[in-house]
Image (cartoon, rainbow, N blue to C red; front, side, top):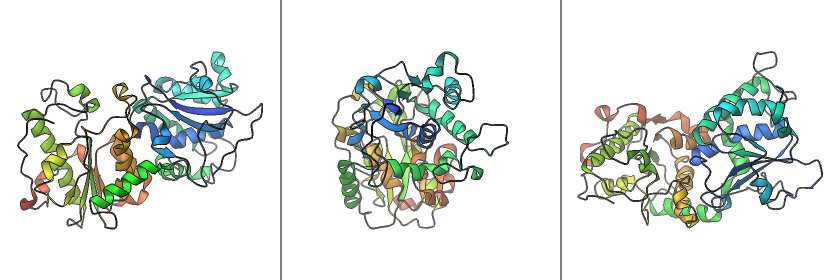
Amino acid sequence: MISNYTATNDMKFMVIRCIENQKCGGLSDRMKPLPFYLMVANLTQRVLLFHWTKPCQLGNFLIPPDNGIDWRIEGTPVTLEEVRNNTNYINGHASSLSVEVQMLDGNVDGGDRSYLSTCKVLNVHLDGGQQVIHAETLFNRWRKERGQSLPSWDGGGYLGWNPAANITQREMLEDVWRLLFQPSPGVQREIFDQMRDLGILHEKFNAVQVRAKDPRLIPSDTIQESTKLDMLENYNITPKLHLYFEHRYNNAIACLQEISNETELPIYLASDSKFGKSYYEHSTPTIRVPTFNKGDPLHIDSDHYQGRDPQDFYQAFVDVYIMQKASCYSHSSGFGLLPLRLNNNLTECETTHTNRECQGNSSFPDEMSPTPPNFAGT
């Protein structure tokens, strides 16, 4: 592991920060810009560190791997006071991120923000989806060949890649993730236990990921609290919401059946709702759903769950690691894209189910169609 920093007076750091009462986004939003962060640290000759306390310490879920980069602030000259200092930071909002990164690279006159390039500890404030979208654009701009109109950077390549290859952030995420992270012991045990209990530990399987509570997709007349449903652990499933969930899950599975040549394989079903477990467990044995001991899996960006037991947040990390092992994969956008970035081979058999209807063309056998459960809520 690359660690044991030798502190010098001119050493500078860049901290990717997510603390309580700060909007950081979910797991995918936080992780998809990783290559961009590594690039900026390289451009500015800074040591890259991560500091999460929302919903709890990042080390509860992910740790530095052997022969990887040790990104923890422990053991460095950086203090918690410096990490929490809001003076020296890159604003994660898309409207200003581009200009501030160019300032750090010396491409534009920094003006009153020029001190960002000289401060000892530079804090990058996570900002969810806005930052993800813009980080991809900026990363790809800096990968352009010399002589093109967009900025390029000097040197013979980035981490061994030739700049002329114009590799994208998406293509690099798999390697960067493995350089920075491996599951914590607790998450690793949970991955093993769930795959064993679901009978897929040593078997080929397909995967379906459903973000059933995505407030952007739920019709406004389906549930009064649809705009915040994704942040709730417990809620009532009304008849309209039941029908909506039923359609979302069945369509996701039907889309998988369209692309897979091995429809007899077990299907790992990852979801943000317990609905799938209740809906499929007694009638569709091919579909394997993790058991949630409490309510729905918790969203890691909710301030309401700050201070909960770290194990209550394991499922998102477990789902990512299990789904990227699948043979074929049907998924939503957002969080559902993260497993694809961690296993480029998975792109050979995958589909996004949220932007198309598959049920009319499904090869899903009629006898496997589930019977709706008789319940009013969770």
